[in-house]
Image 1: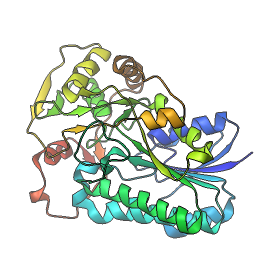
Image 2: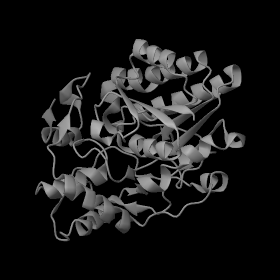
Image 3: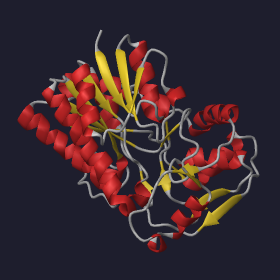
Amino acid sequence: MAQHLVTGGAGFIGSHLTDRLLTAGHEVVVLDNLDGGKRENVPDGAHLVVGSIADRALVDGLFARHAFDSVFHLAAFAAEGISHAVKAHNYEVNVLGSIHLINAALRTKVRYFSFASSVAVYGTGRVPMCEDDHPQPVDSYGNAKLAVERELAITAHLQNLPYTALRMHNVYGERQNMADPLRNAVAIFLNQIMRGEPITVYGDGSQRRSFTYVHDIAGCFLDAADNPRHWNRVINVGSQQPCTVLEMAHAARVAMGVPDHPIRHLDTRDEVHAAYTSSELARTLLGDWKDTPLADGLATTATWARTHGPVQPCSTLTLETDPDTQPEWYTTASSRAERS
């Protein structure tokens, strides 16, 4: 029985991955600072360690106490649209935190390192985005993810730590953080409906995304780990059913049983207008899967959301630059949130 580390395992995607590892008969240690994750997300049978990947001493001590076979690294600060205003935090967690894990994995002879990357590495460009496109991130979050991908490639070449980086996009589903006012449009929209607030859409809502149901892709982490012949590469993972944000908002209203719920259009914000990938490589190398239709995934997610009820948006984010220079969309989003 192998023991694995899942960083971010009390969060959304990480908790679903932990479920699958436990079901497969593995032992799992979860490392999570509970900023966006919750204790109740950690499945029975997993051992939770509360702490940050940015805490080097904690990370080193954790690896010293356990003989991890593999590391599944999903912990991250992921508010990409405002990441440029929290540069130190972004790079301390997403880059230096990842380096702490990589170094500890090398020292303790970990067999394999799995990394949750993002479509944000691509920036603008053709769609669907493909693995052989030249990455040109347009925000600090995407830049950090790309830096870790490149560091893993260097480490694999020079120090023989095999890895896979899965570039995901717009994943939604049960256990998503409903309180985050800055990211995860599906969760934001469902929570706004339950709170009796208008759904807020930036601009005309013509931005195109492929919203990916979490159960469709959580298993890709295990599939990649079990395929050594495909290690040491980046692989896109996501739905191949693009739609506009406004179309998703309409679908969310239907899923919640309120097809006429009001939609409020905010000023257009600076963001990549079309961002979704081709996952043909993943489906060839790791095994094909059927994309859950958006209406079906939203229906299941809406049922879960109604069971848990509305939540007060909450943020722990502290800007590192002048708040007066921040975009209107951030001011609007943060004004709905309590500070914690």
